[in-house]
Image: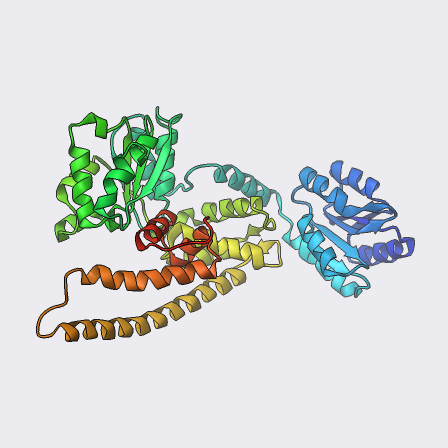
Length: 460
């Protein structure tokens, strides 16, 4: 069936020329000279594409486009305008137009834009996939793979209990989402859910931060406390936390369910002697291991499409992704897991001019990511040389003895402080963006800012 084009322009001569040209290409054309008629045709379900001038008399098609998008969200719209300024182009994009063609235009250029839009317009199968993606995006976790089904089964069994849960998984696998979903489906759902990062927390702060009158356990009274980054917790702080959790003094133990999380295997850390065995057994009542994305590649398609729904809500253009692009994604190892996939698709949605993300765009994004990783590795080599030189000087100055105690913390502070300052400076003090740049949890960054005494000009 030939595509049907709704043409709107108040210039009758141009309407005639375009109708003839489009008809010769095999399209069925219905033309009007006003926005009101065009809007009615769209609401009535007519047409497979809209080709419209911006201004027709006192009417502006940008005023009508939001309603058209609501009535027909998958209908591609190409706007034409003699006012070919950046403001017009931006207005077209903000109103949800598929493309913008400035007047005067080359007829072949316009016909190519029409063909591109129609080729990229979703068919019934694609629309059904998009509808599923919108439904999936509302779920706390996405994935139908066997690995994720195991996770769902454990979550279902423990959600209705008060058992302590330990979630282990690499960075970016969604440990916080699992914790939140367990809380939201528990009998404590109406009470607070409080998350706190334990990374780098000194033992002296444990009492006040967690168990003080206004501490996190008090804030989570009746609800759930989510203890993140257990594997980054200093040994002294582990000792204090183990003692407090073991305490029989109920004044120190409010009515709170504990969900804990770690990026590394705590049992392996126990064997290495870097994590307290008694604290591990206290927290490892029910264990959930979140698989990395490379172990659940069958979920990539559902995840990718749901992320594109999410970024559209954030104001980015509406995009779909073709099957070849999905296969290109599944060939990637995703060291950054689900978070890496989401950020990659966010960039592709923002930068790709087409409505359909193809394997070529995915390849370009993955290539850019590889180049950025190479720069980081090269920088790390240089940093390693500088650290070795710094350490050699420290030991040489102490010869024939040894450096004073606390060398690890002193050196770590020397590296962390300028690193965090640079990230905050580059992001103008935005801690959410700085944490993303550093690749650490936002709560971890906040804790390190407090510990290192860094003064910030603004918060998140």
